[in-house]
Length: 145
Length: 103
Length: 392
Image 1: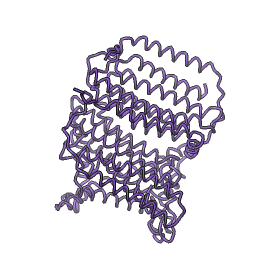
Image 2: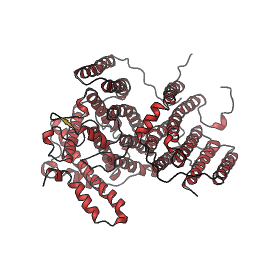
Image 3: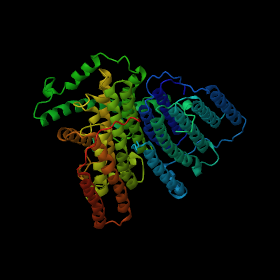
Image 4: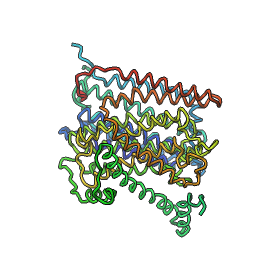
């Protein structure tokens, strides 16, 4: 997050996404890992670079990169990390037995269709609304005069 | 330190990095990128618990993550659309200068 | 040597070689022995394809192709390779050096990764992932990012324009690509490529159960091939790299070896999507007739792949290039509705009882909308004043 050039930021973010996908694969969640690459790298990262292109924030700009109140931002983030780390380390979570079988896509599909059918439909509605909303918000408006 | 604790710490670190970026960068798009990082950190948490937690057969972690990825993508799209609209209005993406509601 | 042995010769060779490897190195050796043949065979195929394409295009355009180097010009790839390796590597001064260097690397890496889930023969797949088809599409989306990186890092207007067009085209056609593959997944019930091929390798009365022989499979196959042509920026969809339009599009500023890497990446992507089409629709390594199964499975796979390459070259020499708005219109207004109807169709096919009726119903369900959609798209459109889409 400290890179000067915006496109470098997005590329570093993409690297982060791929790394997370590797972690998901290691944790045995194949479907989620590949979906993460497909959606985040293939769509969100490209969307971000398109937005950077269109708002012309990609060139070398003279204004400072950090906001005026960046110190308090860092302090808040550091405090959050300290609290979370303390909570994690000082809790005793019991982990399950070592080898879990890999989750098959069939099981995910079954769960989506039976237990999680309503969230699935709501997701469909949400994505449709987001699609239409994004198009309407970003459409160039004709001047009224 | 068990593997689960390791994953949770990593997820907390990613979350704080995302939070730091979202709070201290000037450009609006980078704030959105920070938010994406935070969502990803939460996803990692879910998957880690699904793998190492008490009830892996319920697939709760994986389901939540799938929906979370979808929602994050939708929110990124809408957020970037809003940034584009604001840019069209004020010709810059600097968040420090967008401090008036009059437009 | 029985037909079975010839068919499995690579698998048996690998098993014999693995017997000589100490136990500690078994996983690494197994991975290397699986991957190295793919790394050798497909670039060789790429070299042959370049010369075949130039000669094929030349003949279609009523001229000879390259015919100086070697017999009938078939050693041309060697000359091309020497040329691209010895050319000076120019990086523009204002280019972003790191991203400029990484973009072709990422492209070739992603293109090679896609071969990991294609079954090239019986028992010959690098890795049998549970969600193999999803892996393939995930890697395809990485290719788009590499294209954008290449175009942006050169800091030149033409390359950026080419990159934006290329990325817009690729993300538009990714949806019909994935949706037309979903019909096969619905019919097969699995995302694993090996399982899909195994389902197609059974025969009834000497005809195989390939998915392309069903109405939805045929429609899906055609849509998949159109989308695959657009995804790899081939003619007639090669506006982003049009040689007569914006010179070379997003890889203008690359020279020498990196240009060759881009070429390699594009052709490898073409082979990979053809390989996936063969796996999903044409039965992978299975032979078309049950009395021909004595021919080894990898011969069938490469035979089908060569047929696809010939078809790609033929299409390139025949059709004119599509304009950007025609291209996007085709993707969103024709292919997306057709792929969605195709998904409905496979549902109807699955739920109807076996018999001649479901053939008729499913075929009519697809042909009628295709006709209607293509009629509506042919209406004359008023051309508008061109506006530029910066967010002003």
